[in-house]
Amino acid sequence: MSLIMVGTNHNHSPVEFRERVYFSKKSLQDSLDFLKERGVLKGAVILSTCNRVEIYASSDDEELAIEEIKNFLAGQHKINIDKFSSYLYIYKGIDAARHLFSVTCGMDSMIPGETQILEQVKASLAESDSKGFLDSFLKAIFHSAISFVDKAHVESIIFKDNISIGTIAVEFIKDRISSLAGKNILIIGAGRVIELVARHLEKETPEVIFISTRTFEKAKDLSIEIKAKAVRFNELKKFLNSADIIITATRSPHFIIDKKMLEYMINHKMLIIDLAMPRDVDPEVKNIKGVE
Image (cartoon, rainbow, N blue to C red; front, side):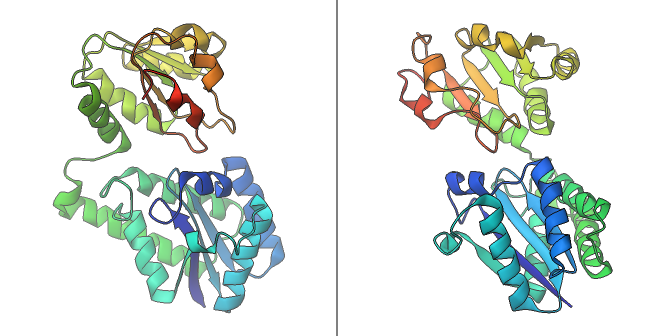
């Protein structure tokens, strides 16, 4: 039995390609069912995050497994895999295991040492397990990687500051505008990424933080925790114009902010941080005067 990994990440491909091969929670479940029914792989784990899409699999035929995964990516996302093969990397055996350990402990992340990836690896493992598509070989390797990270978090100084997308996003904003005091901030979304960002923003005493999401109860729960104001999603447009900073990370498959929404509303400088995958903000928005 051998471990195979086929994937791409922020170091190997542009965001446009990662959007195309991204797996939503629903598509991930259907994809695991499809791969299982095909019978070529003994087990598989699909790790799909903002910065990477990687498929780990166990097989007794390495080359057949690699072709199976590449053809699966091509068919599932309707892409010519040969055209985009330069964006992919492939690891086998001990190299695949070494890569998994590096990914799981955050050393292959855009933010080295970040800890959120561990939660994402565990969630991906649980999805495969729930589908009955996790053989003992694959399960043992993933559990070894997770155990290793738990030990590393205790022993290594790399993790002492508990770095996350939340800390980095807030520091990035402060680098751009020096101080958040007195700024109006609009946060769109209420998932784990937004929660991390919101908790760090709270310490910076902005003027007000508005939180909006399609599920108003989620917005209310988070806003109560950090003393912000919840906004109904269908009222979002009213709050765009007054925002100095917009931070967004939803699971929408489509843009929720486009150029048409903003170009005649903005009469002040605005900083927009898009942390979503697929992206929430149309790239054309950057061409609006005053918007960064």
